[in-house]
Image 1 (cartoon, rainbow, N blue to C red):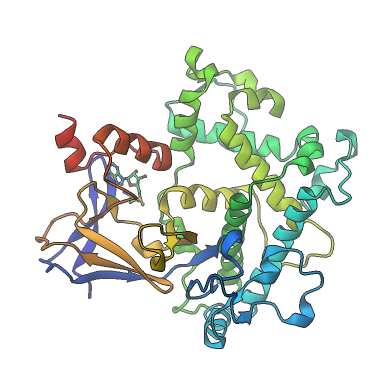
Image 2: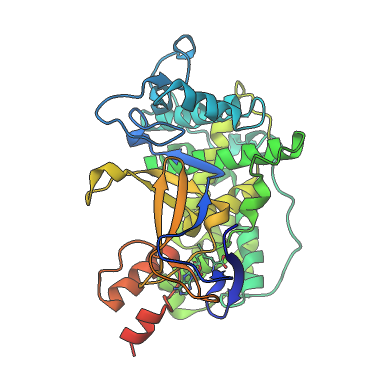
Amino acid sequence: MCPIQVTTIRGRGRAYCATASIAKGETVLTSSPIAAIVSQEWLPETCLWCFYCSYPRRNKVRAIAHQDIKRRKTPFEGAGFCSDSCKELAVTSNYAGEWEIVQKAYLALDHEYRAREQHEGIATPAASEVDVEDYFGGHVDADISETEEATDINDSVKLKEYIDRVWNLATRDSALLANTESFVPESERVDMCKLIATCLIRNYYSENSISDPSIQNFDSLMHMQYNEVTRFQDLYRKMEVAGSTMTIPATALQSFEEASKYVPEDIMQDIQLYLFFSAAFEKKDIDIPWAFNHTLFRHVLYREMSNSFGIWDPSEGSDQELLGWALHPKAVYFNHSCEPNIRKVRQGRNMVFIAEQNIEQGDELCIAYGSVAEPVDERRNRLFDNYSFWCQCSRCTRESA
Ligand SMILES: C[S@@+](CC[C@H](N)C(=O)[O-])C[C@H]1O[C@@H](n2cnc3c(N)ncnc32)[C@H](O)[C@@H]1O
């Protein structure tokens, strides 16, 4: 048993703390991911299960059988495993049938991406031709109750309602939907869609299969910190419109066009990404047994942003390559410190957390979210830009005093 427990610390939220003393070098936690994605760039050489990167040699075992590869034009068709046993583990560590559906979803996203990238026969329909119900296959969310009040950006509850309304409006706005097919996401954002699809497919299988305690369920993801509102607030404060008002008028919700004037560009990109995601799965020939909507999509998107772990290639020394991303529900309670007492090491698919020094009972266990070599202002700004928090660790507090 690991001598650690989750405790709440003022100003830092939940945190792992030691329940007994821990000796330097002791492993405090080993975590396996609920979902992981190898980035498009490294797919041909990186094992989908253990993340061993054999670059420049390609993976030995293909994910998709030769006879099933129709055109071999999309990245996932080149994906694979370093061994048959890794492939076997990938298939058997899911619910029955789940792995095949995940592969289908990846191919659907790849096809949508490639089609948009190459403008392969995509005719942008006129706004009047877009049938919203048809576009979303009936998955359009019900609207939330009308509010006639202005929205104060600092009021998190009201702002969440505003954000929900904006997403509802966006997914019904025929002008936006008509133009949406000309939007080509960056390849890393397509990778993000694959990670989200993996989680939503797990949600479907968790709800529709006989429970298997060895498989992590979607619920474990929901315990991760949800950063949608704080991200909106941070981005909004940087917008020009925000210079004049921290209040969004009630009239903004009359139409998506009006509402979008008060939506930061990065959030508009998130909405476009969802429209891309749903377009990939609303094609007639794609048979994926799940229900998705923008609420579920956002549940994963705004958790991934400050909770995921990079999959770094350890063989590269100081010039490590980022091979992909993984979500580890058990490991998300490690806060950041610029003088961390825990080191994280990737061992194959797992993340292992090891004490860097002797730790006393009651001490908080912290890792470093990236480099801590820069001066305090640089460190704090980077953490704020990447994770939306102002570092309150002992070193930052000391160095900024
Ligand atoms: C991966 S989560 C860690 C667990 C988190 N405290 C929770 O309650 O879920 C990262 C978040 O924890 C908080 N956090 C982590 N390290 C921090 C620090 N040094 N100073 C202030 N907040 C911190 C920030 O809100 C950050 O977005």
